[in-house]
Image (cartoon, rainbow, N blue to C red; front, side, top):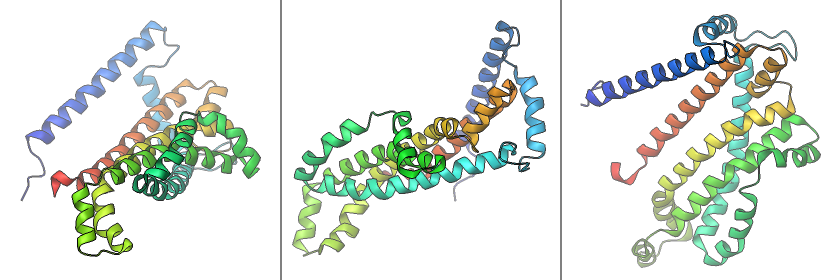
Length: 262
């Protein structure tokens, strides 16, 4: 039975603590250099405690607690990320399984992949007639590419020996899909999903700044309009922490399906 706490866990905790201390010192130095125009850690901590005293209050459209704002953002992220994944994985399998389909679709992917999410937002508004729909649209269209590319790479790199085994045993297309293609390419797919969720979480902030209404991005913009830099800094820390947790979650899943762990 593995020990829950070992020397590697201790090192990880120490390095993480050291990183936080360094970040705090840099933050305090910036606050001093700017003559406290940018609030320091202690000033921000006071506001942070106030915000988390009642994180889920709701006094109307433009006055909601940080917990409600965060839940709104996460809901949009997972909806957009889910739709993007449902598009990216099947299309990636098709592209990876056929050189013809790869040559046909790859130029489209390379043209659309670098487009900024802000450029997609007007088209989203035009298509969905609502800011919420437009925000989910830009998350979908910008987060699907890493999953698509990694899925197609994983499928296209299946060794010929694996394919020959399927032919020798007379596997049907469904059995080949479930016994060879998906198990072999799954680590690549999960890597793509891990990259995609990171992009989705970054995009949501910009999208909500444009769309308004609710969400962590709207909270940042609204705090700027209210000249509350402490709230902006708290929101930045929340965004970073949630992004870290999402990445760690997918990292655990990725290691669980890695071939070297089998």
